[in-house]
Length: 221
Length: 256
View (cartoon, each protein chain N blue to C red):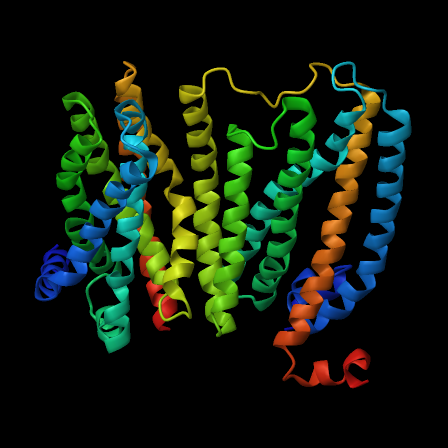
């Protein structure tokens, strides 16, 4: 357990020393969501309708931006091999990196989302639902994305390839996340969406660290 | 020692021997013409049944006949993904070279089947539904299946070390297999939740016997085609990867 915490602490410390990278991903999220009203026009009814989808797609893309950093720097300077050689279980260490990634790239989106939502004229209950779905959904994005990040380590054109691999896997999260906000806005029950998002999170937590650990081992072999 | 030898001799074919590329290569070469002949037989029979025997559909007229290409292609696209992932998983677990080559050989065929299924579906959809594309659950999941194939091919193509490419591809294929049912159901629920009365893919309630026969014959034709092309591809991959070995250099087709 202490290995997990140590890994989270280490990754957060590294991020704090280079804040610009993280802030770029967050800034990207804000800019992309702000572009949609400019491109589509300021029709509030339309904006309210597309808001959940736009915010969720922007969250997907900005999570992708941060993913490259999860293993790439450690792979380049050899730290990843040292991590793999350590007596601690690889699964825990990799899980620590995923948690750190979520705290840096997922959690801020949850906090930023209501501000973006207000720009799209969402009402208060929709904002709560949006934050709730992002809180459940963004950890799944970090988890699934780590598979792509590990598989494309040191590969030519890795970052573009990673988005090709990871984005199709993100579809269920997108559907249930944006779907909950939409269902709420038309007065439907959203508990089903939340249950499914929770189920995805539990499934991903249970299996993905092992898959990513295997993928990292293949990369540094 | 003698025991194991007897055990080997008692078998008609030693299947484990075939897992080595050098023994598999000539066997595959002998099987390919056989599967091409079967492809031709099933294809001709299937086309004859589907164009001349199967009755005209009461609702859709002659246009429905694209079903005889569309449905087998869709079946194959899904089935090939499972087979590909199974080979990739075998290669990952037992570290057999040939399994990974099989997975690599099957991926482009599966991708073409998925593409063919979408393409013929669009041609069918335009006259019947009045739209090339609708965001129906089946169409969307087939499209995502195509994306998964393309991701697998792209990942394998961009890693230079073949061993690493095989293993990384295997992990991706296995993750895809787990995710395919999740994607399918999420797309399905999304569709029913949001779209209300959407166009359903369910065909005429009772299918005529001859229509079913035509479809099964065409499906068999697609099966044989997949096996034939898969074996041809795997032979090419074996030659490429084993080019440094003696047995490849001594092959007649390589010497020339």
